[in-house]
Image 1: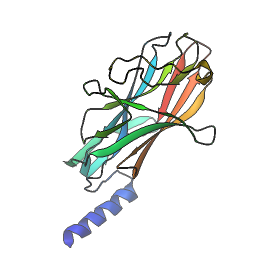
Image 2: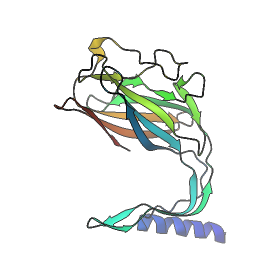
Image 3: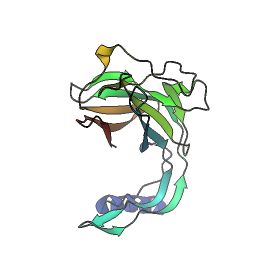
Length: 209
């Protein structure tokens, strides 16, 4: 009874202080853990996000903090890391945040050592290496247009994109959302994606975890 009371008190303190105090939990938790891009023009330019099933922490986690632009403390974490359950049936979809949250495309997970290398549904284990999720490819004519990626050959880790009809290419700045469902649909992770088509011939992609 005493240990339960201590946990409750610790949780309340964590909420009040907004210091990220977390309780023991084996529930999976998919997080945005990085980005990558590559290529240049002519359909080879692409944009990806990395997703991880972050281990749990029974203890205290302090994010980097600044005050009036000056660092107060860096990232600090102390406690017991707890392996989470495997995130089952992970599926990612791209949605349109400017047109009624409409569904746009199914996205593909990339694990080059697996077969098929590109998968629509996969499990993600706790602490597993980052799993890449390919979002967009630039139009093959090198113009300031882009489209959601799908592989021409799911078994080929280096597969080129399956290029849709030109009418499906996107030619403007736009706001999207990547929506990842897992735990058989019981949990969801959302990542905002803002694409800016610049006058300098560049396509810039920013993320809002």
